[in-house]
Image (tube, rainbow, N blue to C red):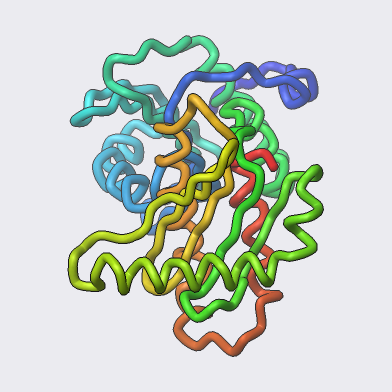
Length: 266
């Protein structure tokens, strides 16, 4: 059993920022595994990492490993806690340097927090400080192709948008349908952006759900596009069954806010 130093509260208040693409916290036993929290790593990639490294983790029970996996470097730290093994996965670009001491410190903090039986919000708080969210987003709309606004979030200074979210959602849905008619539904192309003077909407669509991101001019376009894809995937992970039998009740989508806050600071 690993012995963890008593730096919990100090580290919780100010964990160091780490330069990685994503992090995942997983609980494992011989019979099951549970993804406790992940940020910046798609669920499909998390499942692949678990499948790949699970045998060694269960065999050794405690340790650390570093592996090159395609375009990524994968770091895995794992610790035994009673009947389960807690594994922390970090994924980074293959050629990007990372402060390994900071990774180890964050892993110890996460295990300490998990072992204290605190709520998932504490783990989320630590990870969001270690991998900060992007601040360039002014508003987010999640809309059905039929015009139902399922979820919105606005920056505090965008009250004019929040007061007219229904009209804006209808506009976005209508202009997307119009663009499909102009471009051609079977062309494989779709409207991806609407440009204004100092802002632009970035738009992505999956299975009849529109995700529209209102952004100011930014230098973080690569990160934003990656986060857009992750956000879309996590939305369908959470609400796939609800969308199949959607009854018009949008209150069920309010729980999407913590997911948005993992990636975008609005």
